[in-house]
Length: 87
View 1 (spheres, helix red, strand yellow):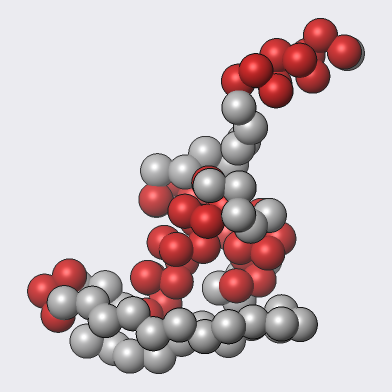
View 2 (view 1 turned 135 degrees about the vertical axis):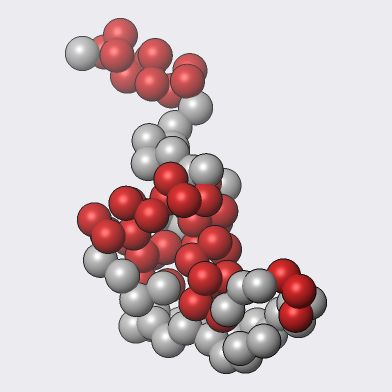
């Protein structure tokens, strides 16, 4: 199993180490993308922050979200409805 982390240009970052079973068949880069996508989905990171976390451009990162079952449009339906009413 590949060990390591993905370097980013964040001003302040923490490094975490996660042990994954060898049979999980994930490398550190793929795991970082998954984590970034899920943090974006949870609203913990913006699209730009998530993309930067894995060293990708925003458009490139947006394209891989579907690989992790994450929607690019990441807003609660009520928020979208409220915004539509204001338009």
